[in-house]
Length: 139
Image (tube, rainbow, N blue to C red):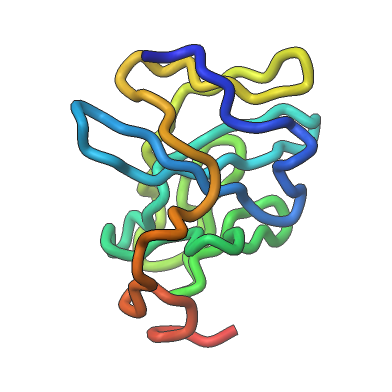
């Protein structure tokens, strides 16, 4: 576990997120990669702190506005650097971090609690409309 390559740094968009899957004790969980203003990359588990069944990134990248990751369900915003909610119903809460490291032009999972599974959406998974954008808040 840990120290596994997730993606190239250039694959992480500056104005969105990159979805990936990891496993914890055999259970798969989604996480997102977020590019910081200095080009470094950080990572958080892929759910909003207001409603933890709501994914920030549904496979097409969560929007990033003014340096914050935006939850499309109810417009909560999270600082890219810390994951702290700066606006919305979960203001003050913080996204759960996943330890990653940027080196040699790539992002590596260095969190010993998780094992890397895949980057992107699992093509075999059915679309879950309960977490699709716009069902609670439209942009």
